[in-house]
Image (cartoon, rainbow, N blue to C red; front, side):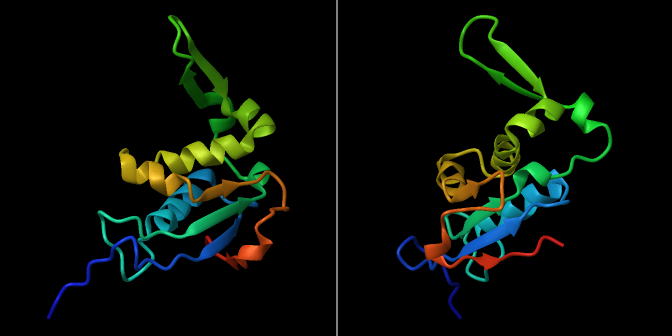
Length: 143
């Protein structure tokens, strides 16, 4: 019996749409990262990008449990000396909730060239509208 090894030419990709309404951010990110990586398929191969495309809608209605809206910070560096910036998740979710979901998913993907290739298959939208109807995305249930 031979072991099946996927390669980039034989991967069939599907499109999924995920509604983030009333879903905790971490649970949403872990499920989306798993689909982007391809772990939901029987043809999963760790060294090949076998994942599917994912569209996340209603990112502004994502939940953060506990006191994370006040206590948790999104930190980034501008590249200049003393350029560490931090924004509370309360402000980030109010202004740029799509960035919060994007960064949560990105943090759960591999930190190499394969992970950078996987994150390009993620689309995040604040509202319920997206412009990928031509790809005929299927609904993906989180719970």
